[in-house]
Every structure is written in C-alpha cells, then in structure tokens.
Amino acid sequence: MAKQRTMTDAQGNTIPLKYISAFDKDCDALALDLQKVWEDEHKRLTQIAARAMEKINGLAEKYLHCEGGRGKGAKGNYSFTAFDGSVKVTLREINRIVFDARIQRARELIYEMIKAKTAGGIDADILELVNNAFTPRADGMLSNGRIFGLMRLQIKDKRWQEAMEVLREAIKVTGTRPLIYVEQRQGDGSYRPIKLDIAECYNSKQLTANSKQLTAGGGPR
Picture 1 (cartoon, one colour):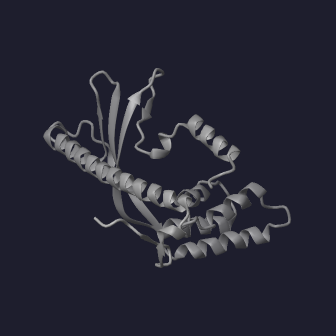
Picture 2 (spheres, helix red, strand yellow; picture 1 turned 90 degrees about the vertical axis):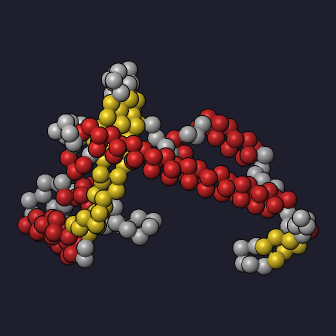
Picture 3 (cartoon, rainbow, N blue to C red; picture 1 turned 90 degrees about the horizontal axis):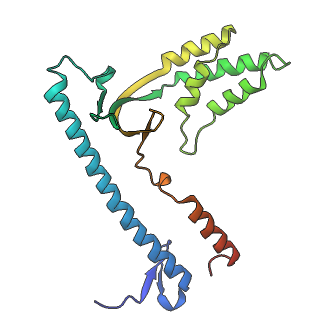
C-alpha cells in the first residue's frame, strides 16, 4: 500500500502532509479512531436492545398471557424481578408526543394574560416558567416537559384556563417507543438503574486531573 502523502481538509482541499502540523495529524487520528470505537459500540448496543426485547417479549408470550397478565402493567408495560429481588427489569412503552399548531394560540392567550397583569399581578417565577417553556431548545423544538409543567400550575385566570384547554387539545400522540430499565436493589431497598450512558462512565477525578495538566502545560501545541 502506497504511503499517504496528502490529507483532505474540511473544505475538500488536498493538502500535502509536509504542510500539516503534528497537532492536526494527531487530532485527525484521534477523531477517526474514536469514530470507529463509537460506531462499533453503537452497533453492539443496538444488538443488545434487540436481544433484550426478544427475550422480554418471549417471556411475556410464554407466561404472562396464560397467567392472566401477572407482571403486566398498563399500555403493555412489563416488569420482571430476580427471585432474590436483587435485580428488576422493566419494559415501558413511552408515548411520542407533539403539539400541533394550536400551541401558538395557547401561547398568545398566556402572554395576553401576562401583559394585562404586568403591574405586579404576575409572579416573576411564573413569568420565568412561561418564558422557558416557549423558548426552543438547541434543536429548535419546545420542551414537552416544560409545557406540561405549565399545565400543572393552578392559576384561576380565565385566559390561563382557556390556554390550558387549548394545550390539551393540541396534544398529539404520534407513536410509542420502548424503554428497557435494568435496576439493581440498593441497601435501603430502592432500585438504581444500570445506565448504558457514556456520561455515567467517566471518572470525574481523572478528567479533572487531565484538564488541570493540559491547562498547566499551556494547551495543545
């Protein structure tokens, strides 16, 4: 295999290796190496999820239906526990929820109420909750959790009540997605989930030490 003599930059330009810094070469190698690791682990987790679903559904078909649904919750949810209670596996069907265009009308009603009460009649905390609920996230979507948080507030103003009714009418369930939880029992009897989340695997002390070392060294060269 011929030795690589050039690299392609982000604009698609072909750059001879002699003009590329050692730092940029190391960054390129690191990025491509971790991309491969992440893709391999993503495929492995996809296979784990499929195998877990197959096992759960198989056990449900084998026992739960013929035993009158024991272990089955609402909306097709299932829960299985190890004989000694040390591990609990739960399958939950989570609704995918969106709000249709009527959410804009609800927003108008809420801000009409706020405008009418600006002379000290509206709590600053409520105003912050409203502003946060109607501020899009980084992905451009509103947070369903924050919208539902508004719907839980006990505000008697007629315009607020009308806005909440419009929000309820705007809710659309577009489907469901399964979530599987594997939890271990703790010493106090509660269950703690085993999270397949890389953010949960970081050694915070080591990250802090590495960060201080990099800062002390003046950063990458």
